[in-house]
Amino acid sequence: MENPSPQMNDDAEPVTYLAGLLKSEYTRGTAPFLVPPSLRNEEDILGTVDLLKRYPALASLPDHDIRKLVEVATFLRLEAGTILFNQGDFPDAYYILLAGRIALTKSNSVDTIPLLPGMGFGELGLLRNVPRAGTCTASEPTHLLRLRKDHYLDLYEPQHKLDLEDRFTFIEQVPLLMYLSREQKERMAEFLLRQRFPRNSVIVREGAEASNMYFVKEGEVAVVRTLIIGGEPRFLELSRLAAGDYFGEWELVEGCTRRASIIALAPTECLVLSRIDFPSLITGRALELMRRHVAMFPSDNEVLMAYRDQKRWNDYKRSLTQEIVQRKVERRHCLPAT
Image 1 (cartoon, one colour):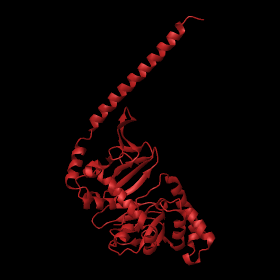
Image 2 (cartoon, helix red, strand yellow):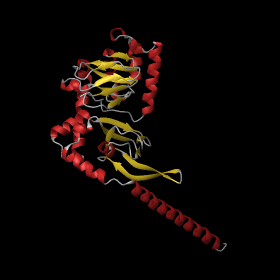
Image 3 (cartoon, rainbow, N blue to C red):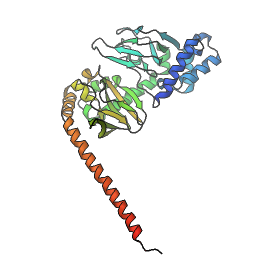
Image 4 (cartoon, rainbow, N blue to C red):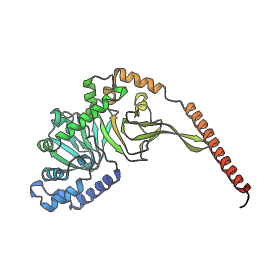
């Protein structure tokens, strides 16, 4: 299975900045990692460690392990349209996407999974010694760190096995997934991607194309619908979701665009299931329960009624507060002077 390593950053801005810096240095030929591994001096190594240790796919490694990685890793630059590897190829390396974008495709689907800076991918083929489960192609000029199989197993294998166990433990605690067999849960643990979102970030935007289903592992999110009333947008919070809850399934089941926006109310971590893998993993009783849940989603008229009810309640609270304040002011004015 060639899904990205399940790690994303709470702070996307540093990764974006690093990707831009890396592209700039690569273009000028000043990046220290352009030196072949056997010729890198201490300055080259320290400079590269300092650059890479902020990348999410390296977050679990201490500095001395990142240093060992820098001493042996090679760096690749792919032009747009270049195929990194094909589905069915035998895996020989692990990759970390430093800048650019990779499109992951599979022969059983027309959909594409976008891989973004900060992601690592290719580990499961190495851990399980099985052929690549998808084809990876550069969507734009792309920069990668390549770690040979033997070096990867030395540095990453223990941590990635712990990550798989952690995802499996989470899956067992989600009521929707209780009907899956142990084998199905183990497969799902391999396909889920870990993503972290800072507070106030929009995880899913209403009206956008649906490409993933999300399970909330940590944090809290709000489900928000947009209503146009009197030509002006109005926003209604439908519900809040916390650890163990999920969202994004409605659109994958119904094949439509996003019905609501999902906003992180706190730093939030999700395990993400792509639209490509959804049909093969959510089956049987789990799919039946999901369809029942989808059938209970509020209609547009019900959402509008809920907005009006909420507005009336807010107007009442506002008028009540104003009345209480006014009475206090009046009583204060009626008090005799001392």
